[in-house]
Length: 260
Image 1 (cartoon, rainbow, N blue to C red):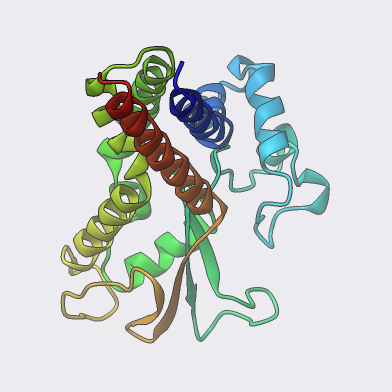
Image 2 (tube, helix red, strand yellow):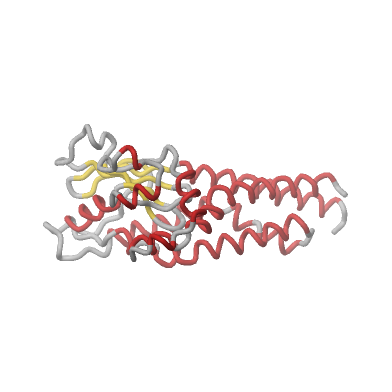
C-alpha cells in the first residue's frame, strides 16, 4: 500500500475521532433530554444522558443564579430549576453588556453559547433583551439545523468511515464537507444573525432599524455592547477541517502516483 494511503486513513481517523468526541457522541447521548425536562418526564431521562452531561459540562459557564452545589450535576440543575444547556461542545460565544446589569455578576456581559444542537448560558436573559429591542427569542434561530444536525453528523461520520476503508475518488470529494465545516458554520451563523436583525417586531420597548449583528468581534445593538467570538467547539471544527484536508491531499497523491 502506498504510504500516502496510510497517511490519509490516519488523518481521516483523527478528524472522525475529534468530531465524535466533540459533537456526535454527546449529541446522541443527550438527544431529547431537554424535551423530557420541559415535559417534566424526569424519570425517563437515561443514566447515560446524565453521565454525559455531567462530564461534558465540567468547566462550562453556569448562570450566577445557579447554586454551586448544582454545577455539573444535571439532576440537581433540574431540581433547582436552573438553566440547562446541551452537552456537546459550544462552537461560538455571543455576549451582551447591558447598562443595567452589574459588572460584578457579568464581567464580560450576558453570555450565550451556540452549539450544533442548541444553546447554553444565559439564554433566558438574552431572550429578555431580544424582546426589549423587538427581536425573536433565540430558539427561533437555526431550527432546521438543530433538528437535522445529529443526523447530518451521523451521515457524515459514515462517509468518513467509508473514506478510511475504501480508496474511491467519490469518497475523496465527500471529504470536502468535513474540511469545510468551519466555513459552513460561520456562513450559517451569519445567516442566523442576519435573520434576527432583519425580522424585528413592534413588541420592543423602542424601534430600531434592521441591522446585521457583528459576527466576529465587538459591536453594538441599541445601547448594548456585543462580543462575538469562537470558543472551544470552533477550534475542534478547525482541527477536523485541517485533518480532513490533509486526508484529501494525501489520498489524491497516493491515487495519482499509484495510477488510480
